[in-house]
Image (cartoon, rainbow, N blue to C red; front, side, top):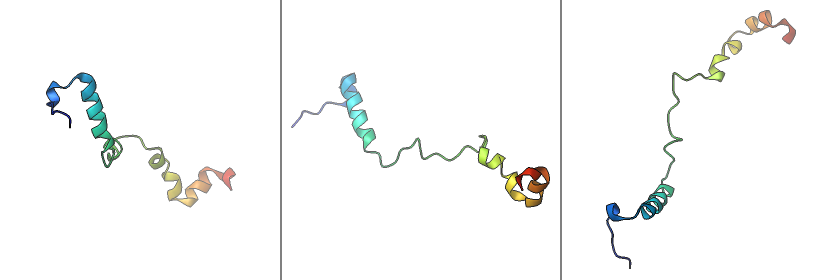
Amino acid sequence: MEKFIPYEKLSKKKKRELDAKRRVTWAIDPAVRRPADPKAYNRRAAQKWRDDDPFLCCFLFPAAL
């Protein structure tokens, strides 16, 4: 059994190893589980106006027919 050493007294290398071991055991990745930024540019939302009105599409792009 290893002797207990407080975290503050561990060496920098041991602290890194311990922190890495703790991070691996997280159930979810907090960087991935963030809500989308409403102010950010969204290409899909910017082109939605084409899907709204089929007549407008035929009027603006007659070569598509």
